[in-house]
Length: 224
Length: 195
Image (tube, rainbow over all chains, first blue to last red; front, side, top):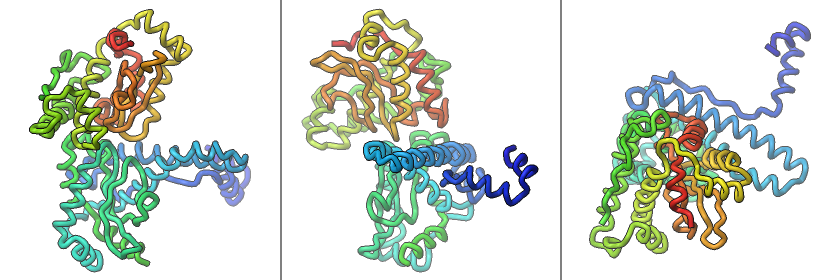
């Protein structure tokens, strides 16, 4: 409505600038899902995808923006205590935004199968075989106590692939130094409506929808 | 020897706050799952004949993490089943203590709800009593942790793992906490735990 009023009174270009000014502080947006909510069925239900994306991820984005506004205010006032107090909210919500943004692209209705090329070779070199890798990543992810994520990451120092887990929404790179390539969300909201308490079934099934092209792309970018 | 405690009421006891369906999973799968896992883990160990509370404290001290996680979760869930039920009036004695330590009963209720809302990830919220000062306070614990390892007396608990409310409330943890804390606290159980 504001846009229409501005467009009528100021003309298109001024309207655009005015909107930019009011939006100057809004840094983060919920990225669109690269597919429809039902695209990953039967592996992940439409109901879960819609809640996960439009409610959970959206909340991280909203709260991250709010935390960053408070951070800007505290910094400008030289309020060190205020800055420190915000660290928890930044980690939770910033991590949540980072992690889910990676996750949506890690999945595809065209997914599954095996990774090939450089990524396939690296998995074989680091883990012995794809099956070994899948087994290790699954076991580590299933074993997470409470909420968290299982990750395939890239370690720049050793030029190798690593499996790691993080609690809650702790982002992989800030926590371990590894560049995130593939994440598996095992917060209960990621699977509960469909898989209930049987997390192993969800972790096993998600391999059917992994977009190995995206993971390979993350790998290429990580090494660059 | 770990024996699972039966649910102290029928699974539909907490409707409309929590559905029978929730209890079908929360009790039958999660709680019994922890109890069965713990049974298997303590078999043939020094923990076998210990009381559950002692298993928690001992395994925590010794970093016997799988035993600790399962033992604490068994204990936490039992305390939760007992903390909730059909609406009860809060006894005057407890209202006086809540007034003393939180300003008012209503302030306690709001703070308890917020403690659950602001708990990030999985965990529990507790009303606890300090053993020396007898002061009541609210505690948030993550994952399986509980007040026993902090040497505080637990008075009440509410589960805020997502599995506790997701079937009935989806992502709306606030609505779950608002409903259950305002309508379903077993105040008489709380009083029975006071020092």
